[in-house]
Length: 423
Image 1 (cartoon, rainbow, N blue to C red):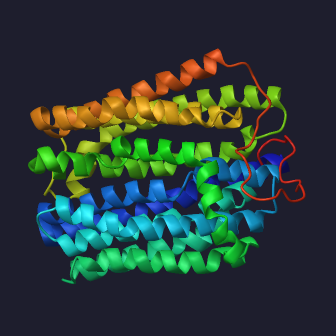
Image 2 (image 1 turned 60 degrees about the vertical axis):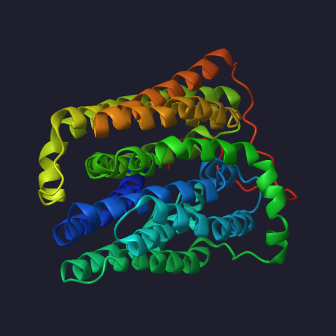
């Protein structure tokens, strides 16, 4: 019973961290809509969309392969953190101006505020969450990243409601990221990158190029729909974002489940990894069904409070959002199985299939059917990606899990994971 209690406690921490992270922006949204109306929310939503897309690319796939690398002890964890941090710093520095420029090109009002939001969110690429997940220490995520973000969001909400400029929100996110990046290595027993880590950046990018391409492709239909819709149907952006943003926040909360399963399925034994991957797939699919139904039922009423009546959400739009949640959760389970079996490169295959459907779908259906059309296009895109992953898994025999190629010399193995149940 004591062991069960420890596992429940760890799972509770894994749930608490993303729940607080998702709740933080919820405090800002009512302040924005009540002070700056639908136009202010549209500007923030575009900044969030472009910023998330940029962060996904600049993160260079470390969120996919990093936790299992740490758990398997392929290299000393502190050195791995420094290698990852160096590569992400370089990528982020290159992409931040692009994010700001794209945001300014899409929005019509509140451009400086929207650009600052996109920069603040894009800096999320530097998040140490993947590292702490690999160590199995979710409490450090809470201390290093979640607490600063929550405090900044609450302060921004109070300031904006009191009449402060909209730029306060983006500036606060930048500050929170700087604090997190400074304290994370100390808390996690890691180190900041040095010259050698920066010289290894080209090798890191080459070794994870397939993942980077896949993440880049995926972000066009997962993170950029708000910006894409803004080019063909600007009037639909507030309504679409009113569903998409809470939806993504909810997915962030339930991501605790696949995150917790990362180290559980990432074991050296191929047979055990395969068995656990199938269990993980079922758990994620069931989770998506439950959360999707809850979203569909509650979102119309929640929107009235969250957006202070400025941006309503219809029942059909909420139902479409619920279906999207269900498919994404199932797809997460399939992706986790691919990574565990050493077939992480095939996540790019599924991303390409989804993007081929999602990008033109958002543009065409969004132009003709507004927010509902855009959400429906995302459902189709995610379904294609899920089917591709399931086909690859069905055709693949259980193989010895092979971690992504190391970018520098392999250090001594650490007994982070030996096939035991999640702790």
